Image 1 (cartoon, helix red, strand yellow):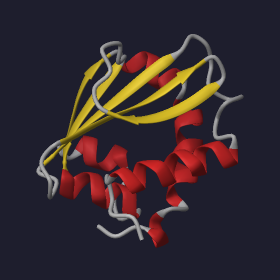
Image 2 (spheres, one colour):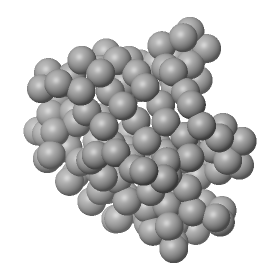
Image 3 (cartoon, helix red, strand yellow):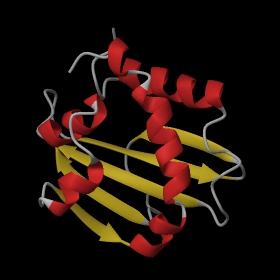
Image 4 (cartoon, helix red, strand yellow):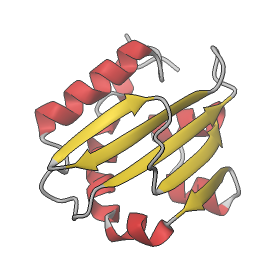
Amino acid sequence: MPRYLSSEWFDAAQAAIDAAGAASGSLADPAIVVQHVVTGAGDGDVTYHLRHEDGTVRLQRGAAGDAAVVFTESYDTAAAIARGDLSAQTAFMAGRIRVRGDLSRLMEQSEAFRDIEGVLAGLRSETTY
């Protein structure tokens, strides 16, 4: 079982996205990059981004210089969202997620990102936290 936010988890998540063809047709143009900074993970802070470009969706470790939106949350919050114990919207409203960037671009593609979240939800039973 991959540990949440480990290299193995990122590989499994990308494989799930690829297998599902997640959102490749439902994300609107132009391309968008959404970045997450997860603080306090077991091995230190983890930064990753989800990039939609040219009909593909890529989940990659590391920062993206062209992120439209950046979310910053604690590991506990990120893990609770990944497990399905907490919605991202509830976490944001409770001040557990800080956001910077162009939220209107994110809102334009909210349905597609929900599709991706659904695909990643399939990893819950295969992931340790």
